[in-house]
Image 1 (spheres, rainbow, N blue to C red):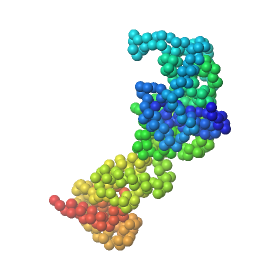
Image 2: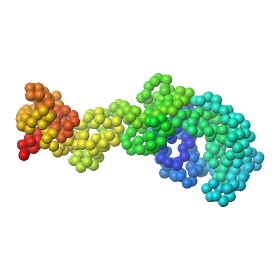
Image 3: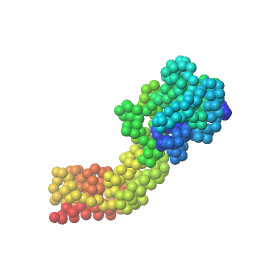
Image 4: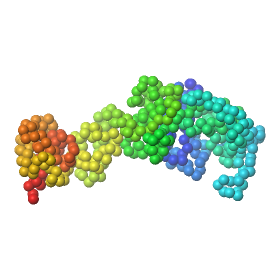
Length: 454
């Protein structure tokens, strides 16, 4: 049995019967923060004894997702590799009369007799002190002699985890409050085997937006889905960590190291916290905005280039680099870039837009006025020196007097729409500076020609 400098030992005990979900991640985070805050040891125990639903693919996904979130552990075990240990403990209980073999009808196959192992329940009252909820008492007489193994070779969950927790020296069992009802059974098994009782802490489960238990319907999805949608691991970790926990500093944005330094399990809330997707997006945006420019550019350009190609538009690296600030202001997660491109939000930077003739004039103007203002803008833009055209303010200065005299909307709406083909877009001075002088003049000329064509 290993020891740490503090003696504290916790476990991640996921069952690999599905993809790693937010609830699994939260369990691991809380255990990690508690252990590392107290210089303790973390055990990863894959509870893979469900032969019908468990797979190695699910186990690997849980491992990869927790590592992606920057969580680690000190030892790794699989329950399926520990069956001999469970058999010995079961046999010890049977031999001492604390458990017995019972021949019963199978629930899955009516008419078929099976031999299960039941614990002799003394029917005592059990009180344990929960680190979050205080004293909790159960009358175990209501449980009867409950089954602890399907056979002497096939232990059930309650029995296996009790044997594992003792064998691995687990000092603190930290888990969701849906496990509170499991605790009396596990304590009875501990007492029958003569094991020391660990300390317990049961935190409230996450809630959906309607304050019901978080589920797929209310927003619970696999961690890998957040990863694939472009959430940053630091942001997802940070958000899940503060759900149901208020650090003494009252801060929201915190690194894993900062959270570890502040964590106190007694500060976990006693009521459930709502998993809010918009709040998660807000967290991710904070991390995107604090990301070093070079790192943001590398990641954003990769997604933007892929999205532009998928939209059927020709990619231009220099244009992509020029719109990075616009991209940064518009997104909360990387996947937003794909959504924006799919909606045509950035495409006009890379290719000439398709215009609807009736949309080119400002609403208060007619076709002839739009042609006149576009022609005037064309003349002014032609006179702007090439070496000044990459500066939006110089383009604005050149056009501003004309726009002020004739009406900003009358002049700038046709110009903006001619350059972008959109009713809402960045200002035309910025667009012109990014697409360049030649493209700007070409698009204005095309708009004028389209207006003049019957």
